[in-house]
Amino acid sequence: MSQLSDSPAQAQSSSRSRWWIVAIVLSLSAGLSWYWLTQGGTSGSTAEARHPNEKGTPEDVRPNGLMAVEAVNRQPPEKPAPDGNPRRIEAPELTGGVAWLNTAGPLRLKDLRGKIVVLDFWTLCCINCMHVLPDLARLEKKYPNELVVIGVHTAKFENEKNTESIRKAVLRYEIGHPVVNDAEHEIWEKYDSRSWPTLCLIDPEGYLVARGSGEGLYDALDNAISRLIKIHKEKKTLNEKPLKFQLARFQENGTSPLFFPGKVLADAASKRLFIADSTHHRIVVTDLDGKKIAVAGNGEPGRKDGTFVEAQFNDPQGMALQGDLLYVADRRNHLIRALDLKAQTVKTLAGTGEQGHDRRRGGAALETGLNSPWDLLLDKDRLFIAMAGHHQIWMLDLAKNNLIRFAGSGAENIVDGPPALSNFAQPSGLASDGTTLWVADSEVSAIRAVPLDGQGAVKTLVGKGLFTFGDVDGEGGAVRLQHALGVAYHEGKLYVADTYNSKIKILDPVKRTCATFLGGEPEGWLAGPLFREPGGISQADGKLYIADTNAHRIRAVDIKTKKVSTLKLQGVEAPKTPR
Image 1 (cartoon, helix red, strand yellow):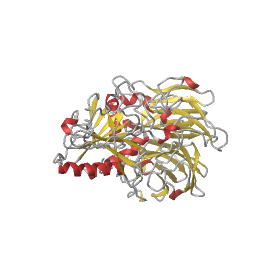
Image 2: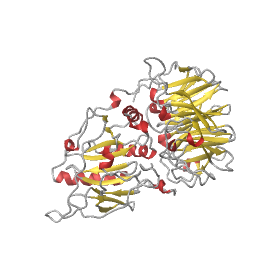
Image 3: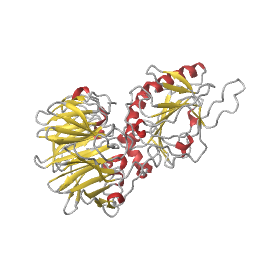
Image 4: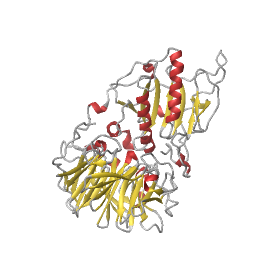
């Protein structure tokens, strides 16, 4: 994820005094290091932590490695303590947040004495932050009595300062630990954070032990936590009594027919609608009027092929249809799945089930790791993949069962030019007119154009950069979107799910003019907003079908009259074991 700055290659300077860096290096089996400050330690220094793609060069991120990990010190140690060791660093208190979620009230570090604490500085749009969440869940499961994880949500986009948006993300990502809305970046600055995600480790006595940025910190954290447990058991300063928190999922647990539907695909020829019921971890198939045809997936997150009844997905997103074969981007499993709609079976088509880290090379479909595939588009025997985690567009040759990188260097930015040298930033939506691949490039709030034949150049229709966003209609460079996740093509126009603005925009790809089509106003007197962070959009028979993600519904819009209705699902119920 990008740093909080006006430039993606330069960290934002803090208005407060800079922290100095103090550390001890512990050698790890992966050949990288975790830096410590425990019981006095000794001093050292490391460079600022960055995500690998921020310097404009695609780099591999090893699953068990650390891009950069550092211990931090607010003041340089002027003199050693009486025992000759450097002074230990007390972790700054968690004050300054505007709201707390997944807990009955605000938490203070002084009330968590005896616990090992991990602070996760994250923002809900960030793909790297999403990738860290499973690691934190593993640690919470492994150390239920010793560890407390606290998410410090520090917004990138304006919409992400909204506590309700964060609450929805906590539910959507199935986060099981407390989260503070650090809307004004006060906690972020106390800890001198510079990039998302950043993890800080605090010992049971309230002292800051270490800090790391980026993905792949599980092994280092695991080793550090196990060592802290040993130390503080011996010191009798470890509290092993488990803590219980009031989680948001206790109030909203997915009993509606849909739960955060991420994408939708309408097919006029077969009169079918395909819904990625993402946080129910399943695919719902209906007719265009909402009558149930089939459901694939048992409702529990997992990775299992087989019949529709027994199959499992994990946060499925974009889809593409080829006759009676439906392709699904199984986002959190890092897979492409194929659903035989006649036989009602599911099989894995591409990916290994592990997050891929090679941005350069493709290979055999089932031997090549994918990285958070978010949307799909079919062009004859070519299946295009919006590879959000790699910041690239990939292509699966269905005839040869082979994957290749199609566009994007892997650097997270907005750069036009030859496909191989262009930059994308978390591409999340795809559409086509048969000649051009249109890309909703979410982290740069842009719509990009990629030639389907691979010749020519990638071009930007609207969008300026990682930290340039808003809600402005107009032409070309004057247009501002905010984290747009979906795009659909119809009769020479693009319809954009402008997600964080909760609007549908209409974009002329030739004139580069963009205007609000729907949204931004309440549906009626005393009614709520027309859309709530829509993530997916498709069209069939003169209608737009919109995955209104945070409202747990599918909206249907008559393109000519702009009449909006909620698709009434018939025969579709929540899974028997709601999450």
